[in-house]
Image (cartoon, rainbow, N blue to C red):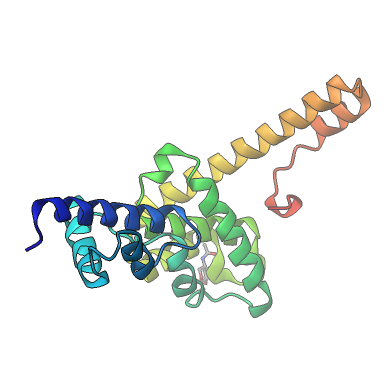
Amino acid sequence: MPTRKSFLQLLGAVCIFLASKLKDSRPLSAEKLCMYTDNSITPRELLDWELVVLGKLKWNMAPVIPNDFIDHIIRRLPLPKDRLPMVRKHTLTFIALCATDDRLAMNPPSMIATGSMGAAVCGLQLDQADQRLTRDNLTDLLAKITNTEVDCLRACQEQIERVLAASLQQGQQSRQETGVRAGNKAREQQDQSSTPTDVRDVNL
Ligand SMILES: *[C@@H]1O[C@H](CO)[C@@H](O)[C@H](O)[C@H]1NC(C)=O
């Protein structure tokens, strides 16, 4: 057991080690950090106590995020191969959007991923080519794949679609304001009549 003084140094080093992992793109190595302490602590001690500190803080350094579910879900949907990159791209955009909405951000990552993919597939209107992808069929299928409740999933997807609509409208408004400031009335009127309602018209 280290003495009290070296224990404090060890604890301090562990905190710097963790902070570096959270903040730096190239975190400190255990060896380098021990060198800074004049090798009064060893890498072995540092790594052991890192686990102790993480356990006490109940931190999980590798939390599951919605993106982790995308491959798992997309593989099991009856999607045409050539549309996969677009579905994936739109899903990622929806997931990012979810992080901006307090209510959505409360959902588990699997729900966010599933709702986002539902919104992406519906928005791209892939059901025109395949009946299995109509809104209700898709929700049922997604709920089965990720073992989620159909009603919760539907509510989540609808909320995502509302947040997208609000965010598109906001973008539209700020473009209009720019137009007004520039005295561009014609442009403003044109913008108003062309408010996008179809995600395929928007470069997500
Ligand atoms: C759901 O898919 C089946 C085919 O798998 C199709 O017969 C049915 O019409 C679809 N439902 C809707 C509402 O489109």
